[in-house]
Image (tube, rainbow, N blue to C red; front, side, top):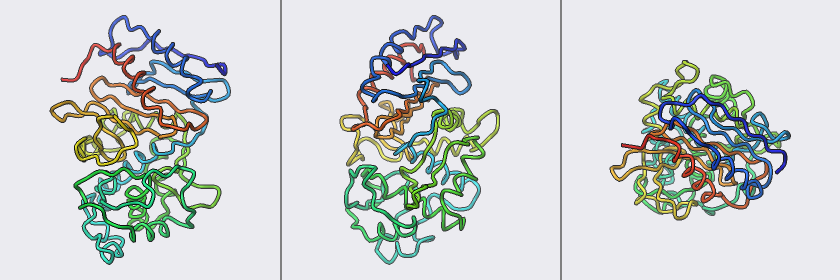
Length: 340
């Protein structure tokens, strides 16, 4: 089992049953070691407490690993930060900052639609693998290609998940409006303020920065970001985003009925900004998840108040959605709180 080690802290929030028994959760995760390609970090936490942590001696919560598509949640948060500062409005049309969008009859696409996968743009390869991204010299060059793609549906009406299109367009808008390269911008506006010192979007190979899948981080760092969201914009009593901005960031933009394509087949999920959303029958948000699509999974449960995070050392051939669903079901049984 690659020397996996469990840490268990007994400081529980009030919503957890008084005699919570994590035996089944620990056993299930241990049994999944092979399916997760050996070494991984598993963290179960609340906004201020660590409930469970599993790691190996060689791959720990301090070890850097690619976030893949989980990077999109970070990019979305950056745009919300810029909006809160008044640098831009999320409902601005992209053409306000990149005029060529008007020239290619895409003048009505907004930044918010980019973050919610609702641009209506049809990518050349909607299910491309992370290792098959065309090599560009800059994010500007990539977006100059994206603007030429075909519109398949009216912007804002359907969610067609694509690894790069909308998120990278939004990332380029951030570069234009601030006159800073994306990796430098997100470090100064999001990563450094949240104390995410081992997180970066810089590509050391010289390829273009990838806001949709280019982050390298650690479980320890990414947990800080998730805790900020779960704690309504605060981390260690410091306000990073206003409560209203976080509420908007985590709000549903595309209902399950509007999701025309999702790589998470069979999952009844809607979409927010950079993350998938699970809601009750009244449309109220229960939880949000930003799977890396390579075996990793990050999720916050808003009604039970916990964070589920799994980062494997080695990327997998699939998203392991079923495995994570089973784990989360076991965890939910230990909470007396249900969503109302």
